[in-house]
Image (cartoon, rainbow, N blue to C red; front, side):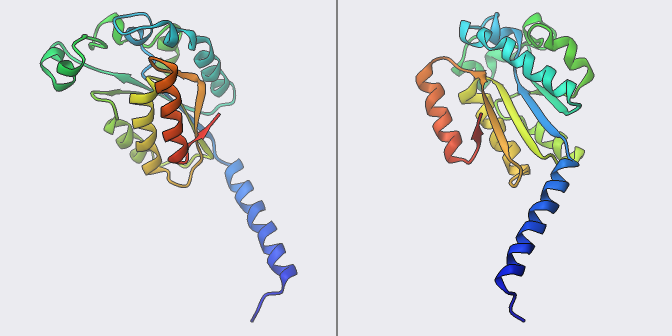
Length: 199
């Protein structure tokens, strides 16, 4: 039987209400990518990455206050770093497990003791994917921040999108940083084409 236009409108309103109610029952997820000492003030640190510290800390505290989920990742290498493929392309030892440079920067290291920390050995973290699949939880939205925007942030954002293709994934621009404005803006263009929301 055909549905009249009024009923079609009512069905749309009902669907939106049900979707809103469903989303209100879910929490947000914040993923903080590799905001570590070596990338901020250590062997690969810069003023650009250090400048976003207060923004990152404020965002983390916002999620804590709201009772939402947070995951931290750590770039993780070992004493044999210089003999790895990454070490050949980037011959600067960094984020070596057990060193000060491997720690999260500032107050984040202490905060992270209460949240999952994923130690990943390359740019995109398959361990992050495994953790999210095992957690098997839906979120109303996912926000991602950290460093470097054009390497670990975008590669992990794509991995997360592969698990949550219908969840809004937002990149927090004032909580991300990379080496220069040109690369930063080009990366944001790619993110937009991949249907990430920039906030």
